[in-house]
Length: 312
Length: 277
Image (cartoon, rainbow over all chains, first blue to last red; front, side):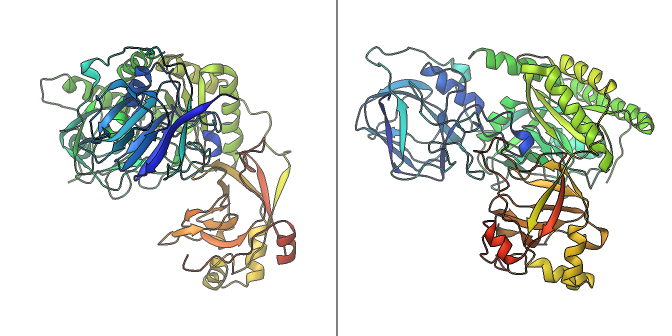
């Protein structure tokens, strides 16, 4: 049996769970996608420690988490600035570094963004459930224990042991990729087939207003507040929902469907956020503002494959 | 103010890139809509933009039992034709969401493939021969608090309510809401009932329920707003089974009323669903 080591959880916050690229091939059974809600930060964290695309990383929402290293570990933190400290000293953001056995890593509270990603050289060891390690609390699937439970005090995070005598890599994230999540988030948006059912004024407002991120937001969906959008369709037959779909319930306040969304839904949809726009939205704190910029499907497709190919 | 927008009345004043992109995208949607309006008579399907890596094929515009074999036939064709480029399929009442791997296929390629599949789509098996699965249900107010409420509201005896619920052969139109949760229809018009105004925080696993013209059973404990009328002892979702979900889209199902003893013998849990749960 391979030796395993890793972290011990000393304190747990609102939500921390292992996430990979998501769970696929099972949507027809009603099983959600899961996976890192900020694919961008997740991918860079894994890249910094030379993990392949698809490796699970720890997604830390909001903070309040304390992890003790059970041995020397080479790791990287990306995404939100959650006031991370190692024995009182802030580790370098968007960088890989060494953490010594016995040291304590703490994520306090968000200063910029909402979700940080912790990747470790060798990768977290977890049993894939239906092809993925992504933890989905609601469905009891994946995560560090295979049961979807979020990380709790006393839980161990197992890490595959690798020879780390030689620092594995000396990688640096390009400055332009180290996103600052403060200020207005300008999100790209692909108009969908039902856009023509929305009133002209609603279409105008969608693209010309700033929308406030509602506090009733989670890994399933992110609600936005603004002028009520009017749609000619009121009652719709439920149909399959893709990542980033923007659905508009009768109250006219859009909901962007994220990784843990229900697989089908019956509200009219204005369109879809491309994956990287979802990533940026996932870092928006409640009360912050977003705006939408239309982009063609072809352009969104090109941007996405260009992004993924950097890591594969 | 509600301004209706038509494809021939689009005018945008601006001097940036978006001033070209927005009208272009809206125009495409509206043009597509006009084609759909004219083609709806001959039921020509429509392939709708669902974002990066996804197309939504709209085969029908209304829920009908005879839709299902067509949706499933298209799903089978997609499995064969897309091969490794296929990521996920989500069949539902009138549509099929097709998710493909953007690294292996461009949106145009995927759409072209779907167009070919749809235009050559044929249904050889109307599902008439597929076996009917029986779902044992213990109809009792302790596990189905709305049993009496519905019976009273509809002026039915509990016995005739059970007869009406067990009579039809239901079809599984879609799986969703939770793993293994089957949307089955159609419920006898006399039994149709709207969702609860306030959903319960916790519905017991196995709870058999009605919402509108649909019926289902909750595979796991979850919040839920459907009217609970009984409970099944059958395990509806188990990830360790080869067929994880007891129900698959396209299945035919009949509810079978069982006694409390039979329910217990089949492994049922009689813990009451608190009416205010």
